[in-house]
Image 1 (cartoon, rainbow, N blue to C red):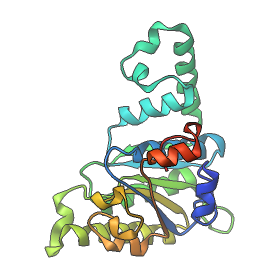
Image 2 (cartoon, rainbow, N blue to C red):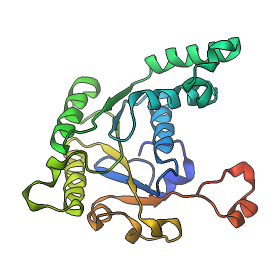
Image 3 (cartoon, rainbow, N blue to C red):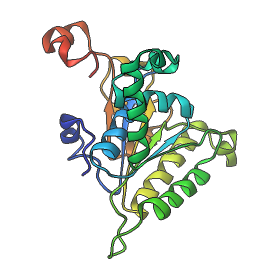
Length: 240
């Protein structure tokens, strides 16, 4: 599979992001789901030079770009968001270099807010055809699609008498079918219900059991407890 840049996570999901799979990370609100996806996207595109499509229905382009430039430059994101980096020659140089680096790596961003899943699948298909391509045997070249995040985009997706859970199940089914048809990995994040703060089971996924049934793996992402931090050491972060 394709490494996410997080070695132990790669092992946990079966050897990285593998073709014909949909891999999910579940977390409560404001836990950093999008930050994790941005880190993974930039590692794959920047370090591995493998094309990445960031399909975003959660944030605006500017927020993703600010976060990405912060990761590449090591300049605090709030300095970039507020333009304060421009008043510090060292930070300015780092951000400008990061901007040029971002232009060179195979990273494509598109915002799909308000579009239904069929239109989004069409966007993914065009990207594969135009930017990724196929080898001499007709197999899709290495690539990764990152979908941030798995939720309903419009009321149109509730057609045919479907409730929200059924519609989300329909969404992930379409993503799964696309990953099989084009022989590529898809990664996404999903909202957990309140029990996701303490419990470790697929029952904590908000809205739909279908998500847990179809994805290849689901990982729960949340804050470490004070005991976890004491045992691990603060240098290993405050998330698990």
